Image (cartoon, rainbow, N blue to C red; front, side):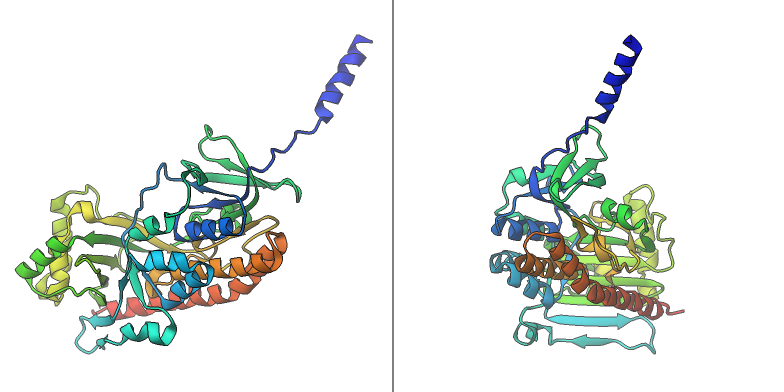
Length: 398
């Protein structure tokens, strides 16, 4: 009899369901990047509670500088004219585009008409540094941010119970939200769980932002000039260099070694001697590199260099399921050959907000957002991949 009572009690204990924690926010946004911050603003303006889960342990803007197309600012204006103004206040308007190849028989050109973009396209072409994140954070209270929360996986429950988020740091307890929108970038754990695909490494690149005084001194010593508002491309010797003159006189420049292993570091010990030896050999005057590029090389120190693998994701025709969806690079990370990354992400936010306004915060809104954005983003991914191929051809001067 005692044995039977024990079995009955044990069975009863096993049959008690574990209660799903109540959602702590209407929407959990993964990533405190540009798209995640804009999305948090517009969701709050529509009365939804939001939590932003960011893998970094504090809000410290990183990266170099980005280029944005007019449609990025048009999308931002459509969801929040205030955010567009805040962003424009820290941007440099691009008025000139130049393209130079080292090969004598290859085309080079210069366009001085990009300044007409606002009149023709509704907004300018712009470049912006990490000030973008500071500008887009203004107005978001500190309690929205959950730093040190790197998403590892999620679990969906019933319609009323939402999505539980589990984090890589076991010290961080799971959080439950009604809806999950992952704007966390190319390494999205949500996408990995949804699709199981992997990023495709393509290039090894470095990015540097140089202050105005160093740029001016280097140009005086070496020659050439950097003009605020000029976006320049120089290709040759299997190298592709991009320069952006910023409004404060500083310059962002990047180099992509098209012949290098995309997963292998270009610099191993981070010393000035290693950097000087590599850059000096690559960008020697005898190799035909213009003085403007050589001046930037001279002004660069190891502390300026951010090195990374440039990758893309496969084109995907599934971005979400149930109460979960992807946004920005998590959905359609593309190569930077056309500078479309942030611009496309702002377009995602515009479409998602339009569907939320039409259908409310619902699965229907998420699915319609995905259907409307996937064809456009797939085309932009393929266009960026094609331009990457053309860049490799133009940089091969041998």
